[in-house]
Length: 137
Image 1 (cartoon, rainbow, N blue to C red):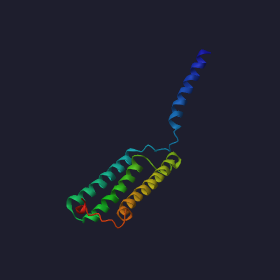
Image 2: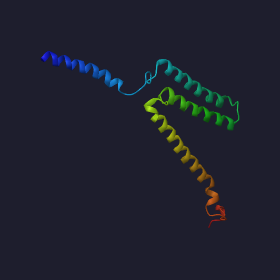
Image 3: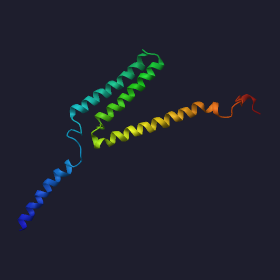
Image 4: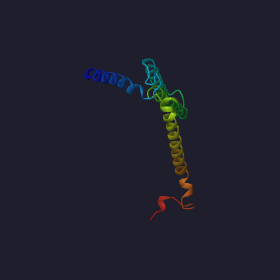
């Protein structure tokens, strides 16, 4: 009887060890492969070198350079989320992507609202008052 109980213990331990690893709910390949990490790395390097080159050579005017750098920064954030953080519609049943989208919307609302308030602050605060500091006593 002791041998039988000992055999069951090994069988449980073996199935529990593989079951514990497979029970995460990740689809096959969710942790990425060497190839996917290399694609992410190469894209990240390219998306870093292009803005550096634009600034160092001065090929575009300042406004266009700033817009291109900001656009490439957004693309690089997406590359990092997809290739290194493995965020997609399938990961965790789509909840991680949904949470990210919700966070982006909230941050956009807060950022744009703050800019709007700061931009219009001079017009909305004490209209008609002269702000010339040289006339102060």
